[in-house]
Image (cartoon, rainbow, N blue to C red):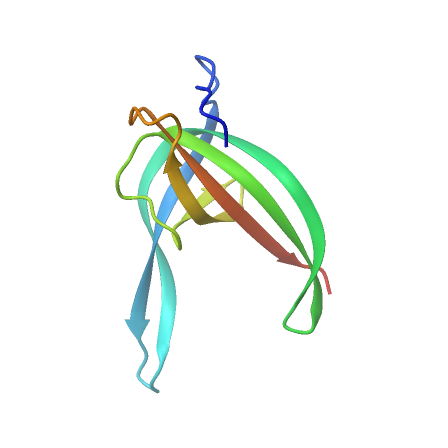
Length: 113
């Protein structure tokens, strides 16, 4: 991602930051829960889409970039809820080194059959 700052007023999408939590199950093993942390203004842009195979089914993998105001608590494994979709954070980096904006590379996988 380039170090260019987003234009003023471009954080127009509302997203919900969700933290991944692991809980134990009675039968053994664990379950994954996503707990809401905050609702934020963001700029969400899709980058690319490709066909994939997920658990012996056809799927599509879509990559996104989500830009938010700088936060220190966003890490890989967290996700953004956006218009009923779940964008999983793959990486998060300071956009220009000044701790003003955070650029998150995200992925979304949808199974089609």
